[in-house]
Image (cartoon, rainbow, N blue to C red; front, side, top):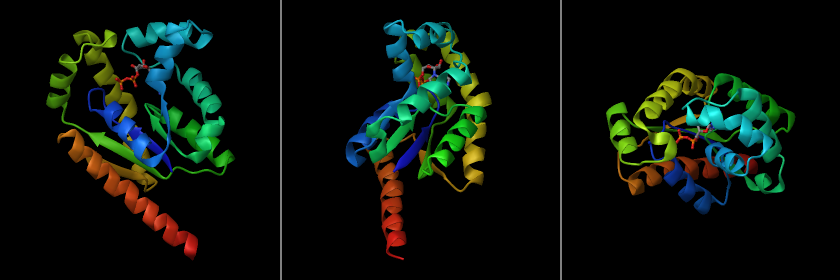
Length: 194
Ligand code: ADP
């Protein structure tokens, strides 16, 4: 399976992503994590990304698209993957589509983890990561609303979007996600028998 996982900061996407990749044996491609490692190691990508990340802004599309193109070409992605934090803009979504077209490997599904804004602010305030300072949180939420949310419609128009209600417990959200993915596995195997 090739999955895109979209959700605002504080929705619990990282936690669900960990569980999903373990259960379905997927490569976990977290762009936030990849960029944090690059910053730490002071690679060329990391040095460019650093100032955007600390300011709560998205890094430039060209930069992250190249990181993902390179990553998706690695052998572990052949078994399937979960894209966690990419795409985050329509331009990134379009770039991903053209890569996947080129490789004849379309997405299986796009999962949206939906959490009401009030609940997000509460959760983020309790978390305390370097880029979780209140003014940076506000910017990250704004960039989600203005740049990432349009992707939901983009994928819905392609019939790929499934929404999960992220306001419940970790177990509850995970079982919603399993229901969606298990139904894909079933319909996929039916198709192959035709
Ligand atoms: P969040 O906690 O908001 O989900 P991540 O851990 O996914 O954040 O990412 C941290 C930061 O890395 C983002 O605020 C952004 O600066 C940068 N980043 C991660 N993924 C992308 C992307 N696809 N496009 C642009 N910037 C990204």
